Image (cartoon, rainbow, N blue to C red):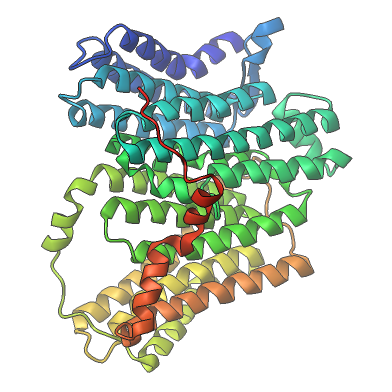
Length: 521
């Protein structure tokens, strides 16, 4: 029974791998074989993912081995996390393949591009399905190497070469961190099987090497997810075709979050490492959110948005809210894939929007009222969902999200705001609060037994929770007040600093010798 299920799980990656080899025979302009093969493989991977979901529902979570000996390296883990990610990757992958067929039409290397796109998707699927450490590490490294060929599709562009090289260096550091982590897990738990490691870790068994394994896992995730200060490469990969941006921002970059969620039980054994994730992720989220507002270009703004979202997801993992982190990965991937694929018409769409009236600039009193009203709405709806039974981490995370709603409410409560705007922002506040608690409840139920719940916070965790909530609250308040002092000379300087990401990327370039550029093919 195992072998047919293994073939079912591998049907999608195998189909995409076949499409890659077909593209090698047809790498040029308007390939007659590569494009149909890629489209068929994308559809097949989606169908296989749905079949995998059905198998999970019928048979429950399990680890499947392809055989013994060398075949034992192929080990498939079927559980809520892997199937959710497989469905996500196959759906976005099939959409990107279809989109790239038109987008790359007329490109003299369209067949080559299509092949590397399929092979990158193959590696991502194998990553999320990995049942042992060898397959996990190999897929992790393969994903980055195959993506590198997509980043260099326009190999004559200096910006593309520099961004790809920076990504290559950061990725190799992340690969090394994951290799060290895998080695430490093998030494500590004496097995390559991921499910066995998680089961033993969930029982509280913590070998000496487990803490350092968690630390290297966190480092690998931080580097993969473009967290400060290694985030600069992500803002510079705009020279790639739009389908690559969609695949990168909606899929590949989520590998860091997937890694943390996959090894959630191990991460819980190292509270100090989780604390670092909260600080790094929280700071990156705040910086990314502010820098995004200062960007003049749509795609660059979306890149900073991804940095901020990945920071927020890393912070969620640091707070041990792993079901919510998985929900965040899914929601962000779907949103960002659509945002990049529709970026060409974004400006026209914004211009065509019907606004309920002139821009209303709220004063300090309106801003204060908006924050108070947002918290009241959040508390009222929260009690309806049983907020008293939620973990302090989940309640704090909801408060951070509601601060964003308070920013919108401030526009509606401004003295010059039309009633239509006030009503709209009030509806947004209610909808956001209801959605948060409903989705949080649903994610917890779906992942019950598969992902651990957040433990009761200790003194360190309480300090981090208070720090995170107060930081997000202060930044949201400052954003709401910004129109009142936007004409001050200091505001212009602040915009410049934020648009450059407080120059962390410039420092990275300087340390790396400014990345001398040479033409590559």
